[in-house]
Image (cartoon, rainbow, N blue to C red; front, side):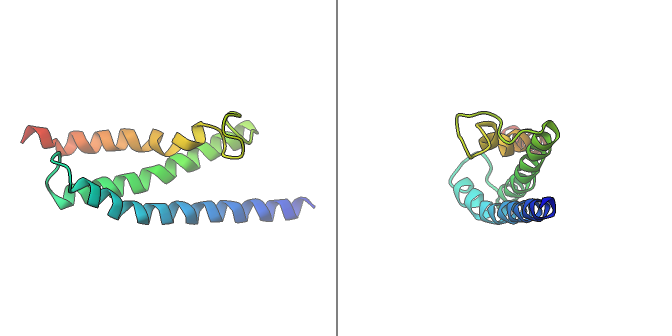
Length: 113
C-alpha cells in the first residue's frame, strides 16, 4: 500500500545521501591531485578548501533540486536523459558549487599576490 511506497522513498533518499557523501569523500583527493598540477593556487591548503567547498555544496544542489521536483510534483526535469532526472539533474551540483567556488576564489585571490 501507500506505507510501502513511503518506506521505499525513504530508502531511496537515504541511498542518495550516502551516494552524495561517498562522492564528496572521493572528490577531495581528485581535486587536490589535479589541483597540485595547476599553477593557479600553489598551496595544498587552498586546494583542500576548494575540495571541501565542492564536496559540501554539490550534494546541497542535488538535494535542493530534488525538493523543487517534489514540490512541483514531477519526476524529471525533461526527457532528454530518461531515467536520469533530466538534463538539469546532471548539473544541479554545479549550480550550487559554482557560486561557492567563485566566492572562495575571490576570498583567496591567488592572482593578486
